[in-house]
Image (cartoon, rainbow over all chains, first blue to last red; front, side, top):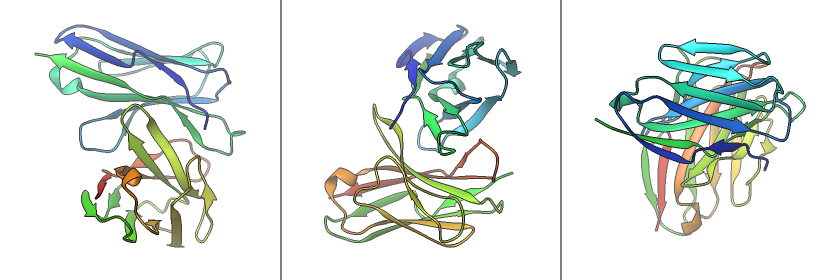
Length: 112
Length: 112
């Protein structure tokens, strides 16, 4: 099945650092979603983006829906140990049989 | 809050056994999904269901079947478990017309 290009694949950072990750696609999407999966749990929605150019924040998290509708990024500011997990992007296009298309995830480790 | 529950967090089965993974959601969502998650491969869609008694194949349906007799319950069936079906299985649900999927905590299945 189709997948998004998500990078980086993994990151190991010091507590307090900022983090940036992104997803790109060859297809246009109407919606971008960012999820976080903590060890041993299911993914939980962090941010949903519905409009090209939209910039949305959720606490220390900021995500943007790219102008071309083919990319999105997620930033985490001032990372803390509980930010550890796998971050997934997902794109949605109603023409794609209403399925979400997923990135492979960015694994984040934070050194206290 | 949407609640998606999965019948087991951990399961150990033997090759050739028939395995049932159960998922229940409490938000009256029409759509339900089964994914498997493997390191480096992200989330891959096995089957999904738009409504009771309806099912559609995802990207990797081989070796699996599903059942949706009631709106709140979506079962994944491994007719004859094999070692290559050792994986984390995630169930999700979604309201009709929306993009966001809500996940259960996952079932980690080991087939010996």
